[in-house]
Picture 1 (cartoon, helix red, strand yellow):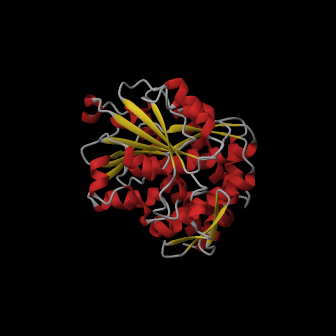
Picture 2 (cartoon, helix red, strand yellow):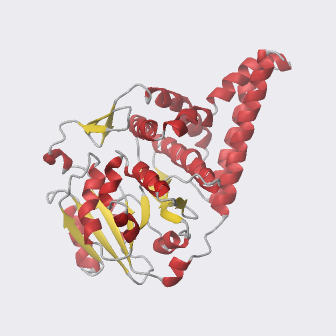
Picture 3 (cartoon, rainbow, N blue to C red):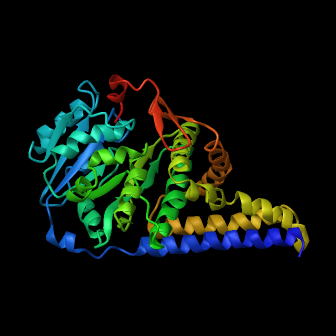
Length: 389
């Protein structure tokens, strides 16, 4: 067979693999967790929530975590700096819901160059319950948030997580971020977990506190610059698995610039590059660029116009993504095909740049990440470490 025919066959294989992944993710996401022994016990739970600054949905996301329909839980809100503008809002929530429901913890512990992890340490140490959830400030918690986390815990679980489901985009940049978060990243994570390759996600993490404490405590999550990468490796070393909730929890986005979206995606790509290289390297095949180029090269050998080859790749590819989003209740709109296309134009550059760049921007701070996975926060003084959440 000619090179063009081989290229066409490989393009078809990549498209088929993508469609299979979509189908696996769809089945997994449609399967609701029916319960677990942990959920049946209805244990007391502590939610540790690091915050920094006022975000577009801060009031709504914080309030969502204080109105859960679960009898025994307490929220510890952690802020690194007493002068942070989020503090008055937290104090307002304490006055509204009472100190028994929510408390404010001020001051971080610099165990790593990861400012969010540093901001969680005091909250983790203050938690007295067996079950602890580390939850980002921008997670919108449904009423049954805790039940859904506990329901996903299995006998072989070391950690239960939720990926973010992007929602409420207010401009096209945020729609592109939805395209990254939902039918690209969350889809692959759910498909991977269904096949036994679960990875942690730092947005919502349910820990059995005695388990993590026996394996080095929260400081053990500083072994990688990204706490979710460290969590994945810790759980696997212990012979356990990372499992995902039945449906991911929302992260309302608001307005996002394309530049900010690209910067965030680059930071996450670089972190994946240095922490899970064998899994990151093939990510370029997860998008339609390679099969589209191969199809363009192969089309004439099959008696088709060159431009028709990429079209035969993109049509089923994007149709499947849109069907997945609609089928599991993720955000979708008439602009979704354009957002998917922009995502897939941008991603190859992000992927390639992750192999050569050493520096990323993390909430205004410049961070250098070496190829061995170690990290170095520029000017990493205690004052700097206390400005991030």
